[in-house]
Image (cartoon, rainbow, N blue to C red; front, side, top):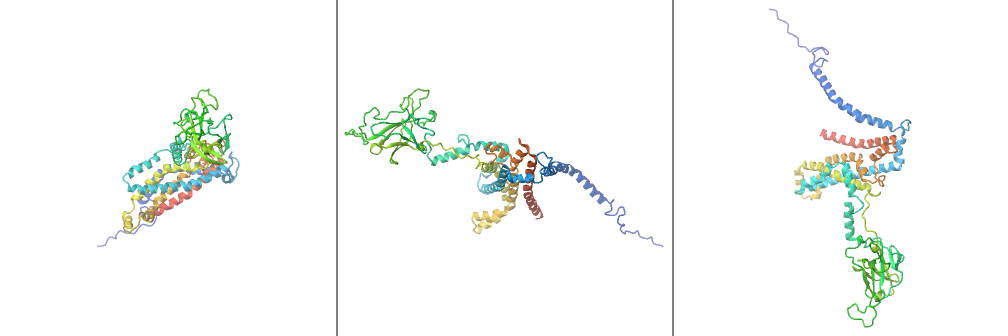
Length: 475
């Protein structure tokens, strides 16, 4: 019986319909359909990316090559202005300070907080308090720190603390801005001190009147001024030991120092009126031949006395320490400290961010390595320096790079905290970009050049971050 030939199962030639890999094959059609679906989903994002990122970058680069009006091509002149113009050079220098200082300090503080809070019971509460400033906007934080850095110690927290510490260790002035009038028996001695115009004599009461102190600023212990003993011409016949002085020679030089001002008017100069207060606490020195031979302090009613054997025939001096201006603290928002002050506000906000990220990395560390090092005799500092920090290096790099990108864009903190008089000294590129592009004397060419420079600063940091992410992915 003749055999039926078997059906051939040889593969179809390439390009034959239905063959695997052919244009009409089911797998190819599925892949093509998947690409179309992916493109459909990606298209809105790509359009937004082009409209909001790529086009502005390209336009900024093109606009930075033209002058203020945009009609004349000037090449790199706008970029040269960044290093020749004083305000732009200051902004560039301050940006470099920010780039180095702010991320480093915030990362170090975050590391310290993360490590220390692992060892205390209330670590979670502490982390919450440190992280809380992240919930505050930059504008609100700027307003807060503008008040913190107020020059007046009665309003600014920073100076209130600073002045309190200073006054604890340094003697404060008693009567700032007090001075004698021309009719008073005192004259300026240089350096802010005052001396009597004539030498003083025992038995002849000395009058030391001053003005220039508001009655409300007088010491609380001040009492109505009183004429000293012997003011009526009667000699003081009592010795310093309390026994009568039979010789009748006064043993002391007495006097009164008082505020020669009567509230509401009236009174006579150089006369102790009933409503006038004594200068309680005023320091008085007896000076002979340029040397201080005796010192005393006025009582609550302004009276004072000096031993006659040393003060008789000397001049009395009111030293400058009585009258110097009270210590007003540090000028935090002055030209020299405004940039570190604003960086302090930034660190206050972002140290919590660094602490949370580093704390998460710290929680993932293999504890057996740390315990093995302690068992081998390593101190806590050695464990921290040789094991904890190296293992946390990737996390620290993420925090540092993120903060570096962030500080390149800092604008609102500087704009709000720095007063107008010091804003030029605190200037940064982002603020200068705003001032150049949208200020009263706008120059879009220079503003675009600043924007391009900021982009060039960010690109290397972004490249480092991308390389690090790729290395982590390959692992």
